[in-house]
Every structure is written in C-alpha cells, then in structure tokens.
Image (cartoon, rainbow, N blue to C red; front, side, top):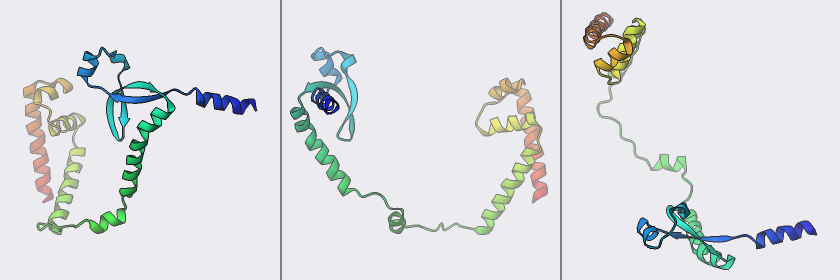
Length: 169
C-alpha cells in the first residue's frame, strides 16, 4: 500500500509549466532574467520561452488544443510510401544519352586513375591538392617547395599525364 501511496503523492506534487514565448524586447522591457529563457517546442516549432508555473488544470487547458492540432496533422499526413512516390514521379530520359560516350568516359577515367596511381607520392600530393583548389603557394608550404618549384613540377606532371593518356587513345 505504501508504494502506491508514494506514486500518487509524487504525481500530485508534480509541477506543471506553461511555455510563454518571449522576444529580446520582452526580456528587456519586463526585466526577465535571460538565464530563465529556454528553447522549447510549441506545437512543432521551436520557440524561445520562459516556463510559467501552472496548475495541472491550467496546463492541460493550454496544451490540449496544441495536442489536438498535432494529432490532426499526423492523421492528415500519412507516412511516405516509396511505391507511391515511384508511381507518382515522372522520369525524363536525357536527350543526350549516349552509351558509347559514357563507356568511353568511364574507360578514360579508369586510365587516368591508373596513371595517377603510377606517380610518385609527392606528385600525387601536388595533383590532389591542385585538384581540390589549393593555390601553388599552399601546395609549396605543405610539400616544402617554393611556389615556382610547385608550378614547374605541376607542369611536368600534367605533361606526363597527357603523354600517357594519349597512348591510351
């Protein structure tokens, strides 16, 4: 019996709070402590609020319409079905689709990867950084070379790649 009594008293002693939305002006004008302002959801939208103590009845009176609106929205928006989305989506075939060109492009990319894998580690680092938009000065700082040295090395690497790729064709 004692255990049930403790449960009832703990739920009876529960403190209820109603979120009251505030703006920076409200906080300033009414002297609200900024530490009391928290983010919470009102409905489905996050808002800056202060939590106002309320009775259980006041809390339920305030929250019921919000709960009802959420429930109504859940009922109106069924879960997305992949089959339905697939059926409702219209697909367009690209006018420029060329299987032979796509295969050739894939083969060229594979060959380029082979050529890049065959480069020295330093050359791969230079080309990787160059490909991701780093400046020659930045590449030089990383590799310990001057900007001009990086430029010359980069041109030699590109010439080497071009030569090896022309043998592929």
